[in-house]
Length: 348
Image 1: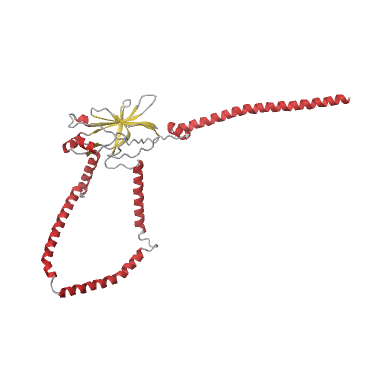
Image 2: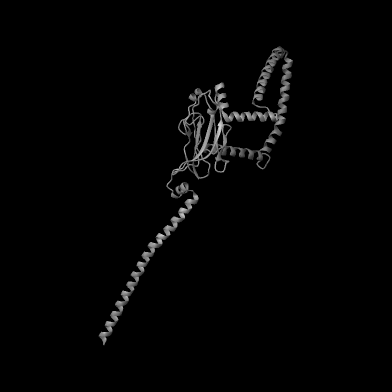
């Protein structure tokens, strides 16, 4: 359990940070936070285009602790955005380049090849249409020939109608066979379609609540920590981020709020998950603030203290009640004995 937040710094700009995910029990903090850092291009030094990422643990009593850090060199992508004057999504560019390399290694067509094939297909279809129009222009005078050709066409149409009538019966039989509820031939395909629809619905639901998988515009960045005492570099978690470099004109045309403020767009941030919720249930608040193990220990101590408190006060009341009962019994016994002795003396 920890209180985590991230800090980002780029160039000479002041560091930006996310909010704190208080009392994160699973170790999977959720921020869904938008960081906006201005950058002047062309840069005077490549070091100013390096994005530094740090994961921190927030402490209230003592100082904050660094969990891990990483650095991403964005100089190449900043130059690409500056020279081409366009928006560059870093991880999408990388994933597209990797897909192209894999396609070339496997001999598969890439997007450029598919685009060329579509253009060739359009050109071929246009040329074929032109050839057909030219043939129609040549053959049109023959179609307006003698009436014998028209009678031949009518005979051919009657043959076609008779053939379709004879073909309708097996088609209806096959249709009835396919509609048979006891036929299992199409059930496998229906099950596959239902499973695909269910998987799609689950993925959409996860994206809606912020638990979906990463798309091609984001990537997990591994964090490391330099332990100076042991002289070792340790891997400590990872952070999923998406980096987009926009020219000033595109940034003005695509407004987006800082953090989770409005307007929530470009891109749209899903809601955070696993955050501490305020409730009137004391057991939930105790478990969320202190953790399940510490909360169970505190609850056990409270139960023991309550038992001792009840036993102490009940013991006091029981002791008083016992003494009152004994005094009452002794009083009644003494009064009975005195009455008996008086009666005996009067008789003598």
